[in-house]
Image 1 (cartoon, protein in one colour):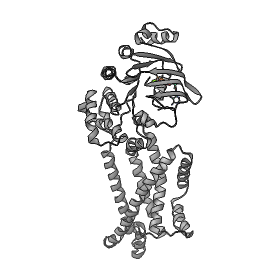
Image 2 (spheres, helix red, strand yellow; image 1 turned 180 degrees about the vertical axis):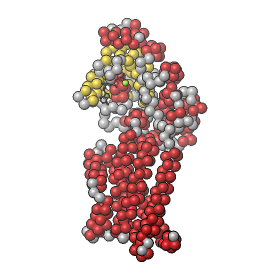
Image 3 (cartoon, chains in turn cyan, green; image 1 turned 60 degrees about the vertical axis):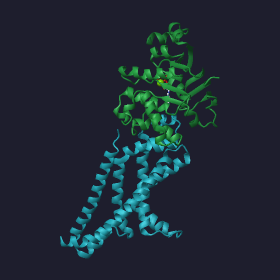
Image 4 (cartoon, chains in turn yellow, cyan; image 1 turned 90 degrees about the vertical axis):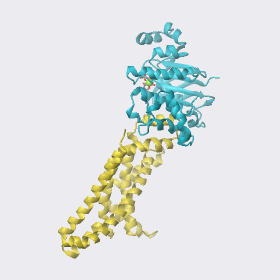
Length: 214
Length: 242
Ligand SMILES: Nc1ncnc2c1ncn2[C@@H]1O[C@H](COP(=O)(O)OP(=O)(O)OP(=O)(O)O)[C@@H](O)[C@H]1O
Ligand SMILES: [Mg+2]
């Protein structure tokens, strides 16, 4: 118990890093997902193809390989240099983006086509239709799956410790070897992750109720 | 000059030619009812009039503008042509009032305040002013359809298209919707109405088009067409529905 209290502030610092990376990456990932989903649904063949290729590549490779490619692979080209936090955020964002894209696409397709017909028959453009009519309805239906993917992405951030990011997991490792109290350290780390994911679920439930489909 | 002029209109879905050669002239303030058996192409014809369906061949001229021309801004034309659907297609995430306000707000970039009064007046006209703050999911079918009519009217259209507006309604709701449509007709709205309501066609229609197999087989004033059909197929159809 004493160990836990002494190491907690140190672990909480890591939790901050984890949350920071997670929040930035999920927001970025959602934007990527939206763009890719719109590409995927676009009648323009090349955009379609780009979107499909992107999703397939991300889904067809392990997260850790994506991370190494972006951090070590791209940096080795020496065209630009990316610090590990940036590389971590970019990897989580791109990875989540591919999965978000599929979720958003399915959400858009789930909206009855009569909605588009009504909007277009009123003289609204396809963009106005997408922004004001389709996406708000699609988003409500996507919330549970979006939450799920966000939770997966949060867990993925624990892999960023391998490129030296001092996130919650990395700090857990350091403490575990420094104190030889692996049991209490990892239980604490686990509880901290659990609490965050639990809060995330509560937030999602709240949003779902708030935007309940009428 | 006709406000709607359809010349040699053809429409295919893949290999399936649904409209074969449609010709029609509709005058301003005219109420034209379209009848015919299921699958004869009535909805497709109506949806070609605002290009909800891509037109395969021929011409559709709305208020002087050939909407088959690739140069036309179809959104501009659609602003003049309201449409009411069998399934209402109200926006479920918006209140009744927002449903009526959204098109003018988005299309004409107007403020909420500036369109609200007109929207409430339109809801009053269809008898639903007190439902303004409710959501479509809280309304009956007949009420939904009247909101849909108000929503279309909010763009101040010159023409209104109706695709079986009462077919999805419980019988006791049909009257209210037809009443609103009659009122519109009386005010001089140009209307094209696909309908199974022969009573409405007889009472309100200036002309009835009978469609079958992708053609307009016969057209006439309602009384003439119903009492004295010329074609065998018209006779066969009417004997089933009258
Ligand atoms: N989007 C579509 N894709 C393929 N075929 C279609 C499509 N829409 C309609 N059709 C076909 O076109 C034909 C005419 O359909 P349409 O809906 O115009 O008939 P209708 O006269 O309105 O019939 P109903 O009285 O049942 O509404 C039908 O055979 C239908 O299967
Ligand atoms: Mg039909």
